[in-house]
Length: 276
Image (tube, rainbow, N blue to C red):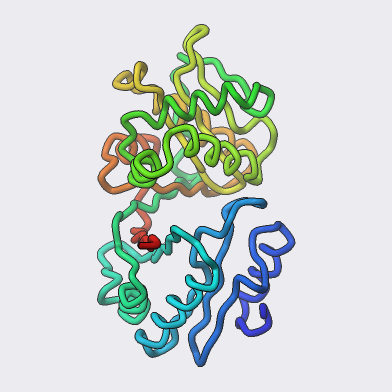
């Protein structure tokens, strides 16, 4: 089934298959419309419509989406459309947008796409925190910290998961996701103020995958310390650029990235489909 996709999608699907994140039976094609589902990490169920090429007809593409969702038996799926700043998916990716709406997807959240480049300079680490590698800690400790960070989160995905699946389920899923990222063992760290955990930052091989501060330590700028640590980690590993994303509505986190020398490169529009 991968052969029905043109390059570079074909090679990307094969690479994802080797990583346990895609399968031929998760791929669908009819006429000029093609789509594939993708799992965020090996062992998880597919959660993302990936490699979606709707072709010229939004009605036909929407029908393929509906039939693929029925065949997959999923309860929730997301699809992202990334655009340059100032563009609108309803106008600039109209066929894709209309196909998603036709299939029952709803655009629920707009995210900032951010980038740090080496010429910006590495953000200073205030030196207030000490760090412990999360991979060397008891998983239960890290999951408990993720539960605490989720409380009062401004992140839309986190809010949805807390409301539908609960904090423990969301934290365990996030832990599995972060531990499956391509990263060196010491990159994902917990920041401490004395013996008190303040928050965490999880860089992977190209991005700041996750950053968060526990409620009792919010409001003191510790997100800047954590972000400086994560960015410096990747800069010292030789990466010339680091990417990140956060919800437009999550103003405190967005401002932290801008203070650290990141700049906006685009917007990501996230569409959700949920089984009725």
